[in-house]
Image (cartoon, rainbow, N blue to C red; front, top):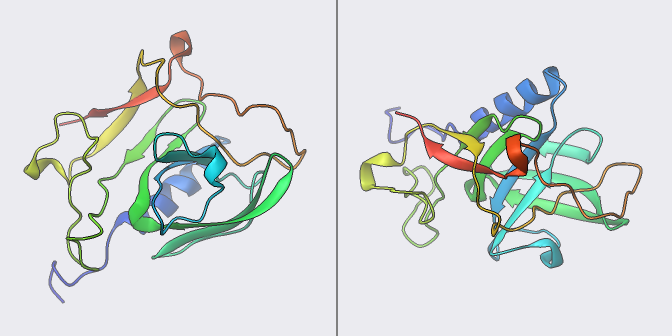
Length: 178
């Protein structure tokens, strides 16, 4: 098996960062680019994206497989089945400090399973050679960004989901690390 035939590292990195978050008492969030292949409550999708709290307390029957992230969660007190293809995961990060990893998205029309992903269209200053670089989530001053919709905890709190905290109250943003 050569590098072109090997499986994607994305699900392994997602599982590793999920484990790191839980081992350190942090809340893992997954940012997802929504399309027809993603099964999430559409009323919580903003600008084609949704941020999901995938912590143990917020989910039931969580499975992070090589092809999909599957779990059950409550949104506004209503239980829902969630199914996210691994290729639609834009990032996984800790709510408390924004540390995590962002990923390029697969181009549904051009990508074939096993091929390298195409750079995400929203990536700042993205170029063709940048799709395998590591990026970190850092605070930004973009108040126009959508409020993340997250799975609610077991208590069934029906209030609006909190924004990920950061210094100065700004949301995390992606920054390329070279």
